[in-house]
Length: 195
Length: 252
Image 1 (cartoon, one colour):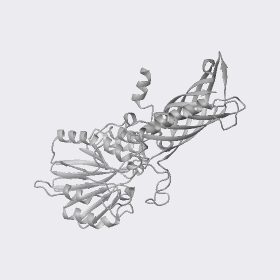
Image 2 (cartoon, one colour):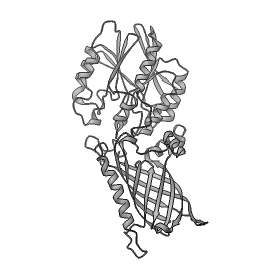
Image 3 (cartoon, one colour):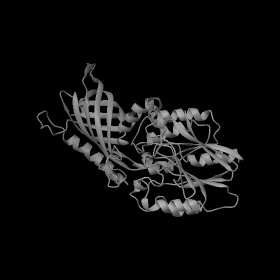
Image 4 (cartoon, chains in turn orange, red):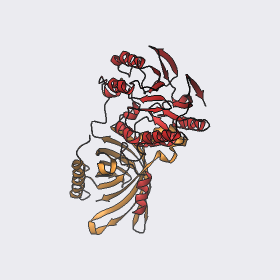
């Protein structure tokens, strides 16, 4: 069993509130988040949310997401913690919009609960399974577009999509391209608020 | 919004790798209903196919080969998946559903990873079950002892003893489980009791997967056969004809 369902929802709310409070001037220290994201799907929860830090004029960024999927939608309560790094090399400014036509990234998610293992349990010999069911690396490929929202004092409100290729999808795709084909990816949609 | 719902329905969105939604449900009950509808036959044949896990394209080849044959049903011997993820269950079920014949899937150790056991039950039904067809009995059980840390009741010999109880009119019994007795992942303490139980109840052939190779041995008068993983592009073709049973290793 994963953590009780209200914990996931509560954590999401606190992270969003925290990020909102952390909104600060450019002089704020590096560890104060400069954006917050809310994401739908993408193998890390029905909804996930968390703070993020960007560098090199938003071309490089890192975020921490807490994801939650309720039993009513996912058949079980899932609480997932994700580290995500992304590189967004291109930027197009047009008609008040800022478009990032490519983002490539890496993520690592951790699922809480006794049903999954992050370290090798004693019952297995070394190398019995070459992966850890609680740990899930993935590649992401996506794009985003955003514009400032002065009324909310937001530098940028950005919508994004991501194609997420989790480890098992990648491995199966490499070994079995004919069977997997488009199933290499699942889709995530999200919004980022940049302070 | 409508588009979003369509995408959600298509499985484009994944909430979690082990989410309990997606694959069809209760497939064994459906297969049993189809077998019952087909009615008994004095002579029948079934295919036993091995571990699919990372060999799905090879498994697709087996499905194409089996489409040319007139199998009454097909049994996959477990490790349908590598990670036990929902998506892999879906891929496996999609491949097996290409068969014109009803199919059954044994639960392998990989299929039990994460929430795999719940996924298995949801998709197929209980991991221990039995049915009768044309006067013969088919018994499936869970022998993935190591996956549960060798608790001493995997396989569940009490359940198995009941499932193997002799009945008048039954000609032959075949058993199916993923890990063969004697393998390191099978509970050492249960090897002799299982083999004795199967011998006492006159099991004809005990079929297994897991070892990825073809073996055909005998213990206490019971035949033990393992089938290769799909990467070897082979499966077993079993023909039951009155008093005779033939097991043939087919390559494709």
